Amino acid sequence: MLRYLPLLLCLSLCTCAPAPENSPGKSVTLSNLEPRRTTDGKIVDAHDGRIIQFGEFFYWYGTQYGTTNGFTKANEYHVYRSPDMVNWEHIGAALAEAPAGVYYRPHVIFNEASGKYVLWYNWYPELWDGHFGVAVSDTPEGPFRIVSSDVAVAHSELGVGDFGLFVDEDRTAYISYNTINGHRVSVEKLTPDYLGSTKENGGYIAQYCEAGSMFKRNDIYYLLTDYTCCFCNQGAGARVYMTDNPLGQWTLTNNINRRPGWRETELTDGVTFTTEYVALKRKPDSTFQHLILDMKPGRSGNGIKLWVFTGNRQGQCGEVDNPRVHERILRPSFTFEYYDHGWKPLSINDAFASDQNMLQIIGHGLNNSEGVTRVRITPQTDYPYDEVRLTEVSDNVEEAWVSDGQPGPIIIPAQQTYVMDIQTASGTEFLWMGDLWGSASDNVKGHDYQYWSSPLRFDAQGWIEPLELEGEVVLPLLSTGATDR
Image (cartoon, rainbow, N blue to C red; front, side, top):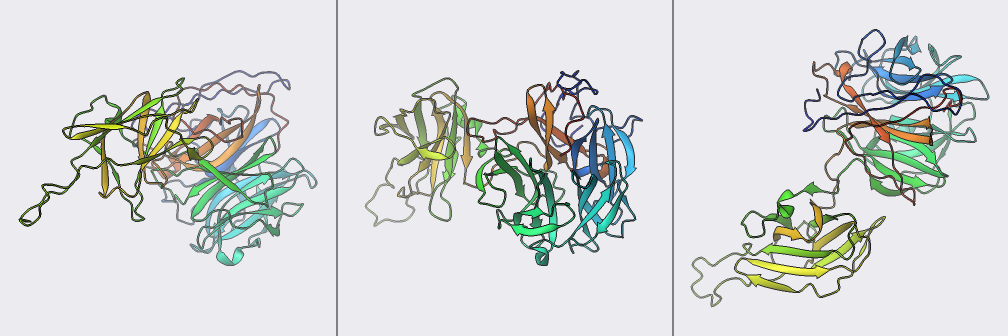
């Protein structure tokens, strides 16, 4: 079982054996609560790699860690294959005659012009002296033979680390990688034979990140990455960058594996009069933390009401010459925003009028925006006290979150490995994959589980909707044999 998850994770992934092209396949069930196993019952020891379809099979290339901590020269690349992503056959070691070093992140792509399968990998003769290597094979099973163990890229002088590969529709290949120094992320074009880099680089996109994965949908290029995780048990996020040119300007949209803030159930429990409160605190830059509200679906013109607890003032002790009885009770002012591909000002029909009873100020407001699903409320900086204490929010509020503007809690406690494109009855779908570090019940790193999501969901503007912990998912596969990227 996943020891650190507060609830059961169960994913049912539906696949099929090879079938006539464009015919729907049979579904099968796959659970994230159990490790992937080979046809002879052994646990698949393949991490931080990719699954890609070549001909009639899906091939899984990953790093084998066994009983090590992952930072040793015992790491090896191994390849598995399956006709249906469920029944995995262990083919064996992927890289032939590898020099001693620490190996991570194997990625294999197919070069149509040369007919070669090309393996890129990240390795370290000694930690953390990072290099890229490239090897080739006539078959996807390998073994792959090294062409170069030190492939130069635009930022080689900073050391190179984690990376991903992507092959475009015109067969142009790109590498998205981070440097060791600063973990700076950029995208670079490969040579036509995929054996090297042209060093055409679009510039830095992000910093302190790793585990990038690129794909393309509806002429939009996506790069998913997040903060360095380094085998972290809590997992990492998956921030989404989008562009229409891989070597151009990338725009950060959202993070699909982080919540908007810390869930505060006390604010939606129906108890309005209490000394149990949630504090919106003043930050070092003098601004306050945000209160983020997810509104109940299907409502428009939602009323918003805040109960502010006034027990945040200091009294006087020994100040006999102070004529003031106590510090004034002040109603904080707020700014209101709604979320629609970014935060935008939200109009309030009235002036957020308030009344007071004993230890509470009750503020009333009504937004006039149709279809608002998420609202952000922020105390204004002229409030003289360092906390705004809230006991309840209503009406029509489903969830309440507190955020300081930093990345929120993780949704899936996994480190991203790859975003896989897969052919289904409804067309190309994309599965998010991650390593659930520390999940193996026997505490063997090589037995840690992988999390495979249901197909990613996209809105009308192409933004990816957040991941969810799921139950069962039906994903009928089509004929294997058409995909080689």
